[in-house]
Amino acid sequence: MAAIPFHQAPHYYRFMIGGAPATVVSDGVLPIGQAVKLFPNVDYGVIAKELEANFLPEGEVLAEQNVLVAEVNGKTVLFDTGMGCLNRYGEIHFGDTCGKLLHNLSAAGIDRFKIDAVVMTHGHIDHCGGLVAEDGSLNFPNAVYYVSKTEFDFWTSVDQPNAMQRDVARRNLLPVQDKLHLIDGGEEFLPGITALSTPGHAPGHMIFLIQVAGQELAFLGDLIHHHVLQSDCRREFAFDGEPIQAAETRVRTLRKLAVERVWCLVFHFPWPGLGHFVQDGDDRFRFLPSPVKMLDRIGRDDPHLVWP
Ligand SMILES: [Zn+2]
Image 1 (spheres, rainbow, N blue to C red):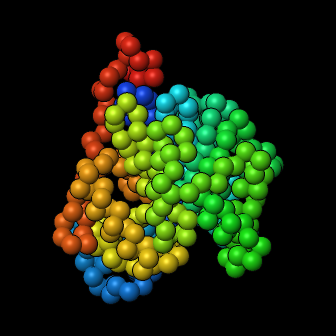
Image 2 (cartoon, protein in one colour; image 1 turned 30 degrees about the vertical axis):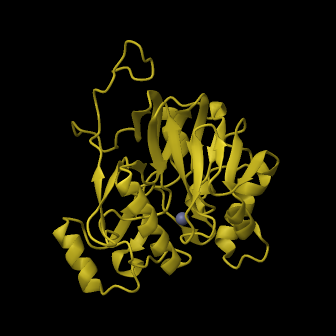
Image 3 (cartoon, rainbow, N blue to C red; image 1 turned 90 degrees about the vertical axis):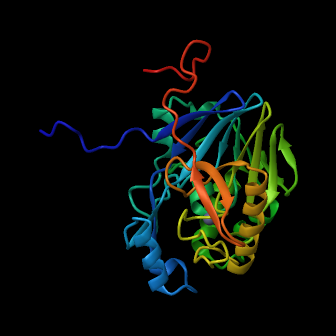
């Protein structure tokens, strides 16, 4: 038997926002297709060169799914849900590497029954697909829920032509409707959590600014997907519903976050997805990952951060 087992360490990372505990919890890795198909307007030679220059493999792009659980001014809040049990949907197979949130929440010592609020950036499968379990029960039964009104109306409409996303939205959002708050951009809908409207990837896509005791973190959802191949933020991306609008929103929003030096958590970026954006040309931005802190505020006064 090999001395080193093959399974990966538990996928959670503890950190602090304004002195309150927060955890990035993985829903697993999502294969999003060949790099050549992700940027329909960019010559593949350009993509291949960027991959090579950045020591990244060609072929299938693997996106992380960095879900956030944070204590925000007395509430335990889950930001996006991951794929849930929908890693297999009819003929569409997203792979066995997705749908790990409940397992990893449990590994992180987070009780899903104690989640007070579930906040979703948009209605896509990997962001709201984890509300309802396979048997129809609620994964976070004691929570209230927040999503943009535009997203709810768009994806749950019986006229929505994307049958897969429509069915996912209806299967997950309709059962929680009596505790679902439909919000608009600009609203501080929970103390310390403000929604910013960022349409393009999806019509009602929102990012969330989280403020605790003077420290800020922005949860970016699907504003941007790839840390290298989207350094040029005008590049059109295959999974953006309205690619030109999405690029416009991406440039405008990242410019603001870079100028204001806002700390960010990016859902699909390399684990755990925390870092800052800096402007690197007109429409170009670089992502500077925050160092993972192994020895930050351990023990003593903080039972959440105890070295094992
Ligand atoms: Zn999405």
